[in-house]
Image 1 (cartoon, rainbow, N blue to C red):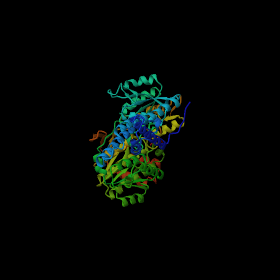
Image 2: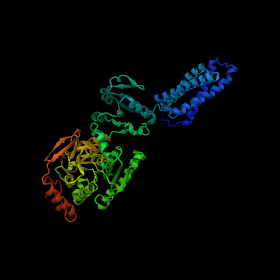
Image 3: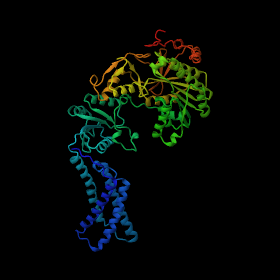
Length: 623
């Protein structure tokens, strides 16, 4: 039988504590005088009772000893109560000594009684809490079926996770063990739960039905996280992770914050570090314009730039609802003082008036140009839009940057611009060439950054797979052997800021994307993380390569080589561009005439400018 009860109100707990305080003091007095209190001591009893109740009440309120659920009382709660009683004894002792030495008033609470009272207060105040906890767990919920849990990490976070499970999740879980890599902890216990070597983990998973492995270590390596997840998936155990302390609500961890491990967590590499001092020098007290600010990359750039205390950040985007959502999210993440520096502007990068107005009013000094159309299959059918947004839009913003003496213009490109096989990638390559030319002919430093797919971006393969799993499948993969580079959005943006700080103009910065990853493997892992079985609960369907799609992506053209920088995760592409002036003339012709010519003519013009553009799986393949 499962017993459901409402938590005891805090006021009732505080009242019970005060009644126990009064009882223990009176009981101590009776005990001190062998249950026969002399008449001369009765006034001292009443005065002392008043003082001891008031002093202890003050410390109960100050330390919040009454605020936690009694049935989930923890070691921390006991320590808090113990110290409130210790501080009370110290305070009353000081009052005694001051009154006696200054005013020659006898002790209001005799020291012998104070000591007896302290012992009984500890016993009764902690005892009744422990009794309620035992009663609740063993009597009311003793027959409740519990799920087994193992906590990975027996440090402070591991102890907090145990407390959270008991406090927030009631008696739903039974903690089998802690697992910790520190051999000094192994063989010992934490809050009565044994601590074991990680080598014992598989033994536990094999011999017990373990519902969850909770990873409590905040800085666990991605490789270790991936290993633990793979091991747990083998035994149908779900992996949960504790968020960083910075994301705890009001500095406290709750059960709802412990989340299932995500595919993104498994693809992360070791922490990418950048030289924040250089970034700070670049962004501090500057006016920053971010185009496409409501998009995946743009919004993260906004978040990261705020930390470097710029003078102002102008968020420029055409999408009203995503811009509104960005504003709401930032209000939850940053202070009012920080958000005072953020300005939201709705506008179109292909509208000369919109662009001119922003530059004229705000005079930006640093530009991150993230606005772009990026979906390969869609742009295969709309090459005019690819030219309009990705090339003409970049040209307008870049020209305004030159006109208004912008210091740096950072262009966000893509690995699909390398030996492009689709209109989207080719349009970004045209923009790269344009930006390179403008850098060589102006005082503004134009910098290009190039990276692969970002995890969790709007319309990314991850989001599509998640939607397909939620709807019951099938999951569609274009080809069993398709591979892609992947990087998390925060990683990509950190490296964009690094490139902005070290770039001097004309460079194409490449980011260390790690190893290529099979899309099929991603789909299989995501199915397992969702608790499903491939072939039984959900199917994978191969749909064939989409228009413009190729099997693998590259970061370097055939005519370039990479040069290392001081950051091992950031490289510079050194490439010789032949006849750049002629290419730019043809790009400008395309910008001026794309609306007047057919889609085929647009693609033919692009191929003339970029000979390596080889349209694949597309209606333009025959050109």
